[in-house]
Image 1 (cartoon, rainbow, N blue to C red):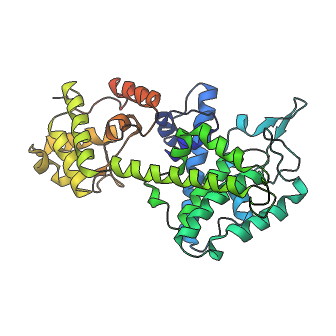
Image 2: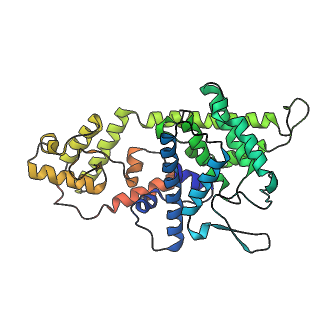
Image 3: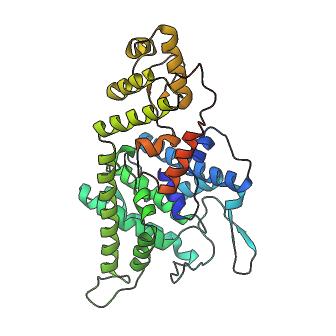
Length: 365
C-alpha cells in the first residue's frame, strides 16, 4: 500500500495485483507495464531494507546525509532503465546516478532549490535541526517529522527521485521515533489520496518570509506551520481509518462475506470458511487441526488447506508449518474496502471473478 500510493503521487499507477505478481517475479509482457512493476518492486525492497537497518541499528540517524544518499542509491540501483534518466532542457537525456547528489541546478515550477555546491551545507544543517537525537519527547519528534518532510523536499538533493526518497525518509523517521504504527498505517496513502492538497501545501511552504512577524529565517514560518498541520491531520486521519478498518468483528464479517461469494460460485467449499475464521480468531493453527475445525475427514481437510494456500488465503513459512491468514491483493475490496481508489477495487473484483488463483485442487462443492 505504501509503495502503491507513493508511486501514484508521482503519476505512476501500478495495480496492487501487478505489484504482488512482481514480488513473485511474474512480470508483464508489455514493457511499459513491466517497468512500472519493477519500479514498485524497487520501492518495496528499499522499504524492507530500511526496516532491516533500523532493526539492526537502533541508533541510526535518518537525517544523516549518508543515509539519504543510501536510500537514493538503493532505490535507483533497482529502477528499470526507462526510469533512470530524465530529459534536459535541450532535449538530451540525463542519466541519474544512484546515490549521487545533483551536480546541476534545476527548477521545480517556481521553486529554485539550493545550488549544487551548497547541498552539503544544507544537508548538514538539515541533520543538525531535525536529527531525532537532539529532540525531546515524542511530540517534538512528530512535529519534526512533518517539518523535515518539507525541508528535505525543498533542498531537492538529487537530480530525480526526490519525492520517493522523501517519503521513504519519512517512513524511516517515523519508525526511528516509534510512531509508525508498525506498518499498520502509512503516510503515503493519506498524501496520495489528497495529492493536489499535498502539492499545494508543499509549494506554499516554499514561500519566503511574509513580513517581520513571520518567523526569523528567510522562509515563511506560518506556511511551514500550515504544512505541518496538514501533515499531522493527514496522519491522524490515516490512523483513524485503519483503526476502523482493522476492527476484528468487522473483519470477521467481511471475511465471511467473501467466502460466501466464492461458495455461491462453487469455487470453494463452505467448510473452508470455518477454517479461515478459526485462523483469524486464533492467529495461527496447525495443519493437522484442519479436519477437526472443518468437520471433514483428513483427506478433505488437506484438500481444503491446499485450496486456501493456493489462493493465498492461508500462508505458512514452511510446507508443514502452522497456517496463518493471508491477504492477497485481489481480495482487498472485500477485506479492506476503500483502502485503494475505487477503480483499483473494481479491477481487483474483476480479477476475483475470473479466479486468478489457478486450477483448483479437487472439486468445488
